[in-house]
Length: 328
Image: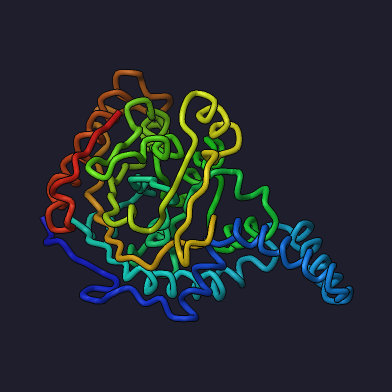
């Protein structure tokens, strides 16, 4: 077995300088942009600055009609790369690989199952292909389809190689040889952000990714992010109604705030550390075609076991020895 290796901002502290903050705002501050632009429009209207207001309205109209992939892939190689590299400094993000060589040597795409979701799974940026931390794997980040319905946000996320997390897109990417990173617990985990002494992962009912992994013979790699709880404060709705709304729109109703306490703004500049486990091997007796329910359940159980072991082994070194992992 290869020795663990760590990449990224090793031994450094988060840097929230102007350029890093701008990059993170372009990536994660779009909801705040909407209401701040509306407030600016009101100010311009009552101030009589009609030309400036017209320019703002024109920009908004452009963001509505511009195709999500306008300028792609050139913008992905330039603006996308700049945003991701600045964001990594903003979070002083490190990635520890338990066996990086096993990932590099994989002959098939990989599914990086990243937990927890928390308010926003911002550590997914660690898997952006421009960082080249996993040679041979051009990884797509799979996120809620809701972001691709919002002007401006849809373009930025497309530039950053994000795709919808729906089953059809997931399967198409794996068939095309693309590795994928996603949060299997999803927005359901946000409903359980109540206690500081536990991390809740909503995984027991998430069998779909195990089915896809076996169908396409793409191993799942368990990954865990330490430090996410410090990026945002939050106040969310609870109960069945909130759960139904979250499933419909891809977001849990509520409010969250991070940098400068701006509602729905970018996250705080806080240290993040991602630990990447080893690929969970395919069953030796796996046949082509649709996997059996027994095979899906067995592979899913292996994933749960590997994710639990990953967290328990590394929680103390990241200051979370008092935090219990609960999988529901």
